[in-house]
Image (cartoon, rainbow, N blue to C red):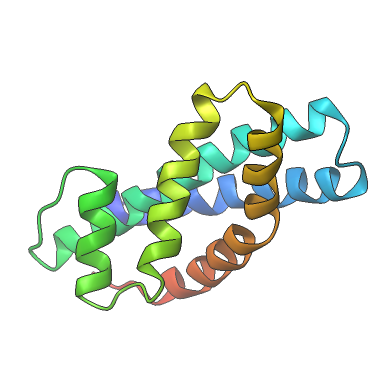
Length: 132
């Protein structure tokens, strides 16, 4: 199995867990365990998403190393359409790891629940067409 295919498989598994946590969060947005689970599952699925992009770019002979460089290259080569949303996801992924202000955490969770959920769902469909 190639690295890209393995990464896509791992992304799909993490995405399913993310959806499960997203549904739990939607049932009770004040439940701390759901909030933590959604935050953690988002961090994992985002990490795998940008690494899928990195591996896909590599098949196109484009070498990148960091999440933001990967996002910029994927946007510039029109692999992704919403570059700013991806940059925002990267920023919120980093912020969620170190954020202790619950008002800011709530704002991140709402973006995870809405904007990012749509973008990641679209990405999950898109990577079905990633060929090597």
